[in-house]
Image (cartoon, rainbow, N blue to C red):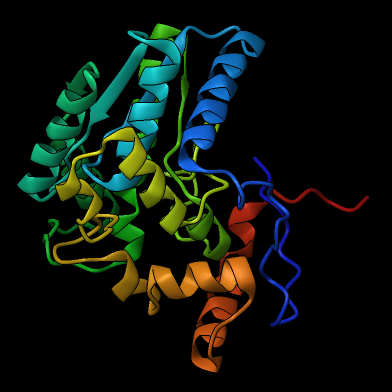
Length: 265
């Protein structure tokens, strides 16, 4: 999948009205996305959608949209991997709220085995080594595609525009999907859509986290808030510190937004 190339000149990495969603209200956005999801199933000769249910707002919105688009042919996978138990409870709350069928696949053991085989050491939950932590979303991607193949489903990713812009996703992990229903919405727009769709308030207010290690949050890892990031994406307005952080994140993650490079000859 190729994401829009960001022209990085340190002032122009935002897109004003270039993605066509800024003026849509939540009702129309929901209707258009559901129609698009239905069209994609027909075009790809697929039966339904499978997605990861992390317990966060992004997966909740994707679950609600997919459920609305194709009824019973959806499957939410809850995939704890040394995860906070609250995340699993939140994922179940989301599934109950939208009557989404789920399956829980506990990845602790296979993750532990991978870490031991790769490093020769046991995994410690407080470890903040991203090379190790990124195994978690990659194992989840494998799991999603197994069930997609078994059911003739498509994998619906949960990445939003804010995350895609700065590369806040794991390559071949949560970045691995057949389509991204909320990929044109910045985080604040996802929150507005969540309100409209009836996502539980506790999920909407929950601090966003990739759950790669205990106590991790998106904003603390990025070094900026989603409000600051969204403002810059949509308007180009930000102070110098925020611009520097965003430009650095964009530069470092450029490889995530393109297909593998081929020789030029």
